[in-house]
Image (cartoon, rainbow, N blue to C red; front, side, top):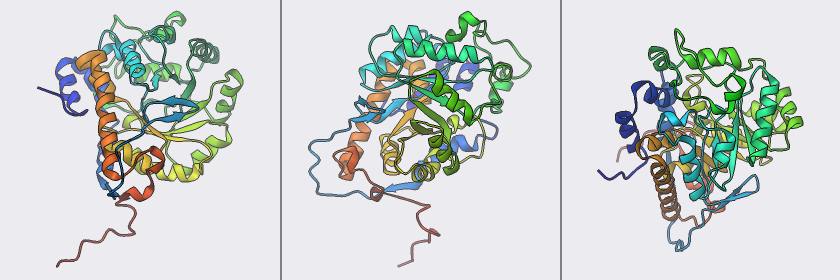
Length: 369
């Protein structure tokens, strides 16, 4: 059966992967309300297309932190990709590079920063978890810098791991033939079996719960790389992030895997964009499955989006080729959405091109004729 959209990869991944692995990738926290809302909220934004505009040439290129990319669609950090496919992060890195876009490598990757760099040229960011042992953090950041990574995406929404009930039921742990490659030499690369989720126990043991804004400042003393703060959902934290020297903000609820009943990222986006006042770029991750979703995020003020689950699901289904296809399908859908909305470049996409159901004070039913 020919795959015609990004969402179709999920069912194929479910067939192919062990239950523990698929559930780890697919599930969210607790009731998974936010998991569904991340998708559903996009359907409450409708288009106001403009017609009779010459759309024979469409330019989707953009720059992110000064790096030119082919489209505003990038790859979010997702952990342990070799559980999905033997080539794991190598395949993802090659697919991102061939699409001319950015890959973000997870701290908890099953391939190291050096291994990913060895796949060839490409613009790559490194997602960072701050461990209790700050020497480990400093060492890791230096390694990412040396390996040619261009920015740090600091995850700030995980002082503790969210309650992911599928992982508890499955007693999730990293399969024995894999390691968290970035920590291999530090005896932090393995995950023990636990009475609940092995990852939750690992986080409780290793990740620093004292992390605060002063640490964002500290990070700038150990690296020249720009820092993106990933996991911001409010205006208040947007202002604090900018004060702390963030080069950009990623509106993220961690794929709905941390605190359930936070808003979808597309609903939180405008609040963050307004608070940022154009001082730093704002990006979004969470729930993007269509080119129309990309357009909606840009119309609401995002400078670009990141995809997570579509990468691991397509990786499980078809390896590098699957990830290439996902990026290509989203690119083609986004280009078509731009054309049908009357936009020839990203700067032509405006708030007037969409209407959201929260725009009206009270969405009134249409009068009966």
